[in-house]
Length: 107
Image (cartoon, one colour):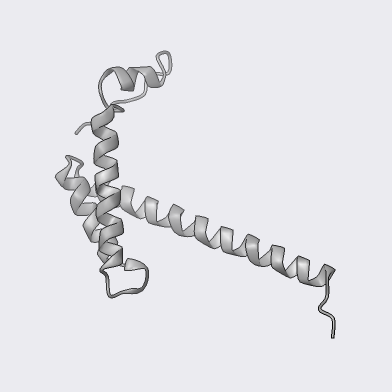
């Protein structure tokens, strides 16, 4: 699967016209994500580390992506996903901590 260059004059509609953003692409991404989630649920490692990456990379390669591109996409997904979770946990912790200092517990 060749990734076409984005023509600035035609924008994203150029990619959509060629079929790169069609229903088939969405179905493939959903299938790859489902394979990763399924692998994480059966993984003996915490967070599915290693198992999810291998499963998602294999699913992307099976759907037509080249190996190095599939590895890069999976690692990018895992980094963004973990950063989102860490940021959310930190924000919730901060909110609880601020709330606790505003309203101290009564003895």
